[in-house]
Length: 177
Image (cartoon, rainbow, N blue to C red):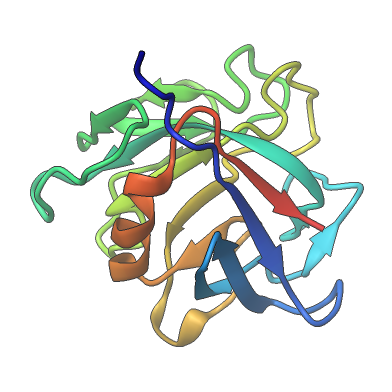
């Protein structure tokens, strides 16, 4: 009988609730990370720049095949295209869901020139159920130079994210205390 892969929990650690950087731990692996420009919050709202406090499942991953070889992971993995987006319009029926551009409501473009979304891991925040205005597009993605704060996501160096991907599965969670 085959043993199922071990479920990992990723844990974000910061020095305070207002800190915008810290570490992400997965088992014995500890890597530097950036979090939201407003730190972390229990009552996350759309556009507040905070990373949501809680334990969130990991849903799936995307990658830019024009910039990277297909990364190794047990997650569902989709190649991004230039038309891919994520709806951030609170009143739209596709709020906090993947969409294709052009889209009739506000939606973030996932195909970015700055490399931040060369690899995206979708976190199961505010998706089951989706609550309008509670926040959208909370991802684990590539960090900016100097680990500048995010808009609410968790960001790590691209090389670290690629190292982390094989450890992730649909049973993995991320905890932001």
